Image (tube, rainbow, N blue to C red):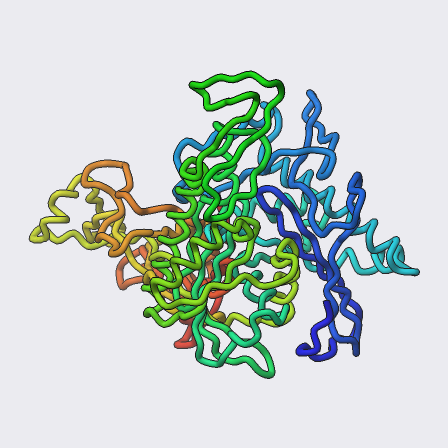
Length: 546
C-alpha cells in the first residue's frame, strides 16, 4: 500500500522495516523497503507454507514434539498462543490447555518469531529479482516493529525483545531496533491510511478506537490535532486493555457445539446437525439436530460485550464526553451480532460506530509501519500513577508514622526515617508529551571509602485512583492493593559522589540526584541527573524487568 500523503523517503540509503502482529489466533506480517526518492510502500506477507491460497494471516500456532522441539507451524496446526500481564482482569471460567512441561511461553514466542523471520526472508528473496541480495544487505540493520495489546508493559516488552533476539531477527547489539506499538494505535493509523474514515478525520475532532481482537479488547480515545500535511493525534483518554476477545465467546460456546456459527441479531433459533439421528430430549437434540435458542447464543457474547461497552463508556467519560465516533477493528467486531449491539450502544450516546472497509487482518501490521514512519501520536495519557519508594523523616506526631514504627531506621546522617514512603513522579491520567521528561529529587548517603556507587531504584505503578502515603501495610511486608513493580533503574553515581563535598567533620556524603523518566513513548526510558559546579550533568541508567 503506497500512500501519497507520505513524501518520498529522503534517507541516504535503503532500509528494511518489518512489522509483526502476533494475535491470539492469527499472525500478520508486513514490511516496507525504504528506497531514496520513492514513496514508502507497505507490502503484506501473503505466502505461508501449507496455505493453498494467498492470505495475509497465518494461525498463531506451533506444535512441539516430545523433546520440546517445534515441528509444525501456522497453517499446519490449530490452537492459540498465550501471554498476559498479571494485573489484567480476566473473564472467569476461561480454560486453556496446559503448555508442554518443557516448553515456556518465551520459547514459543522465539520459535514463532523465528518461523516468521524465515517466511519474510523467503517472501523477499523470491519476490524481487535481487531479493537474496536485498535480504543479505539490509536484514542485519532492519527495524522490527512488534505490536502489543494496550495492557502489555515493560516486562512483556522485554520478554518479546529477547524472543526477537533468540529468533535471530536482531542480534544483542541491535536490541534497540526492536520497537513496540500498541495494537490500538496501529489500528487507528491503518484506518486513517485506508481512506475509509477520511471524512471522520477532522482537525480538533475526537474519536475512540476499539480493537476487538481474538484475545484482548483495546480501547483508546484520541483527539485529532492535525490532518494535513500529516495526521497528528494525541490520546484524550488513557488506553485500556481487557482480556475479553473472541476466544472467550468460543469458550462459552464450547459447552453447546463444536465448530462455528454465524449469528446475527434477530435470529431466534439455530440448529447444529450432529452425526446420527438420535433424539435426546433433555439435551435439546431432536433427530440428530441440536437446537440452540437465541438467548443461549446471546449468552456466549454476554461477558465480552459487557467488557467492551464498559470500556467504551470509560473512554467516553474520561475523554470529556467529546468523542462522537467509534472506529471498530478486529475479528470480533466483524460479528454481525456484536456489531449491531455496539451500534445500539452508540445510539444511546449519540456516537456513530463504524467498521473500516477492507481486510482487517492486516490493519495492525500495516498500521505499525505507519507508526514507525510517521510518528503520528504526539502525546499520551498516563494509565496509572508512577512513583518510587522513598524514606521519610520520622514524625512522632504523625499517626501514620507511629503505626509504622517497626519500619523506623537510623540513617547514616543520624536522622530517623520511615521506609516505604511513596513519591509520585507522574499522576494517573496526566497528559504526557512524547519528548517530555519527568523527574524527582532523591538522596542517598555514602561513607568515605565506598567503592561501589551503583544505585538501584524500583519504579512502581499504582493503578487505583489516589495513591496512599506508604506502599505497605503497617508492620507488614505485603503491599497495599493497587501497587505493582514496573521496572528497576540502575545507575552509577560515582561522578555524583565525587562532585559532592563531605559535611564538615563528617565522613558521610549525602549525595543528591534526580531520576528522570520518559513515559511518552511505548517504552520507559530513564537517566540520572545531578549538579556539578551548578551545571546539570547526566548519567546513563539501565532498565531491568523481573
